[in-house]
Length: 362
Image (cartoon, rainbow, N blue to C red; front, side):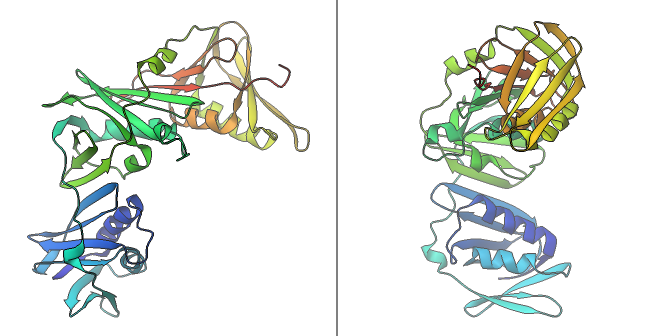
């Protein structure tokens, strides 16, 4: 194998594969395959497979397996705009005009390969998918002890695609336009496997009984599924709120107020929203650090009510509506507060639920 590639493009592809895979061992292998007009960078672990295409000038076709993290670190350290990869005996030489690095070649025939994409289910616009995935995946749990809460449920319904995730204390639900294909889609996917960089164009979604895949512009990622799809339809009924108070407010303004109150959130990390006639009062209180109070202009309908939230959960919810006005539908008691907004420019309709904290006085 012998090729010349743009250093930044190749380095970013290698870094992305390494980031998405669990390549913790020093000799975890990265597969490079040169041919035609480019190079394919791919890898897999027990659960996920990633394939990324990058343009390159290929002098000699070939394929090699190299240590993933060592290769990624070498490329990231280079300053020159182009890099040449040449197989020299049992080494892969990484060459620039003034430097040479030689990586050991691993046993290519022993590599299990990258899983094939499952059957096609349909297509979705990449911008809409990323716009919906980011806030929904943020609501999934990061506790592997409860794996069923670490996933995003992806379900097709006619011309819509539904994304849903919860960690029991919050829940996010997004609906986006969907081009249905030959088969319906209903899977529970690990949220961590969906943390890929911005794809381009249309994204094809593939699924089988045990795997899901996404493909765009020659790139793809496949991952093993979690258990039976969850959350179920009972969780969606939480979206049907019985409203006690409705507050329309600029999401960014409220988010900044919550951020300023967070240093005063106390040992429980809580901030309080107090609904007044024409404003929200954002308060933090800590016996050790002091207290804060800030007023944010808002349009209010319904009762004047006070709710306390985990500051980080409320901040995550507001971040999902950045640049827009958000409607807070506040319910009585310990029932969830629903955050929503009209569909964005990509047609994504997002709803975010945050469970309030029990007040210290109750």
